[in-house]
Amino acid sequence: MTRGEDKAARERADMVRDQLLARGMDPGPVLKAMGEVPREMFVPRSHRSAAYDDAPLALAGGQTISQPYVVARMTEELGLRGDERVLEVGTGSGYQTAILARVAAEVYSIERDALLLGRASDVLARLAYDTVHLRHGDGRLGWPEEEPFGGILVAAVGREPPPALLAQLGPGARLVMPLKYDDTEDGEVLVRLERRGDSFHRTPLFPVRFVPLLAGTR
Image (cartoon, rainbow, N blue to C red; front, top):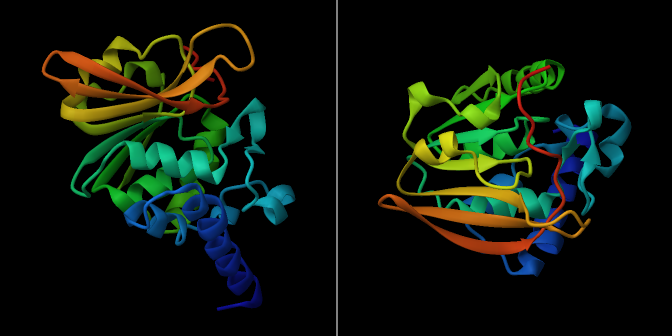
């Protein structure tokens, strides 16, 4: 292990202890993944010294990589056992994708921004995440040919979950995404929806800030 790798490993351990365990998260598979995935590989080189800060970081095109606690909680709220096929809407940097790949059997991830997708694909390939499948597309439409999914994570905010995503959610599975309830800065809340037959049980979790879920690609 190089000096830089050793420093990053210590920063990951500190992050898990101070940002996740200290906030009451369970020391299970999600925290194990958070302690293993090299977050510094997924952030712009200019931000690497802040990779493990308790804050989101900027990416190209006005996008962001969520703060570690939000990444961990969104993953945990999916309630995964480890044998699921999971859909992610908003690949972004690929960091959340990598965390999901550590706790699910397969990850199908969609990104509307071709530049971001290319960069994420390069990093994920370099780190040998061979259970991850990437697509350039409109995430609101999901990945219908691979449904049903054992969990869906949406890393962008909308007024309501897209109907196509709800239709692709398997029985008893959960969809986790931020929803915007009003036009104020504090009007976004992370929500968990669990499929129960043809209905969806909705549980608000905590306030968040995310980029909007947009139509189309670029």
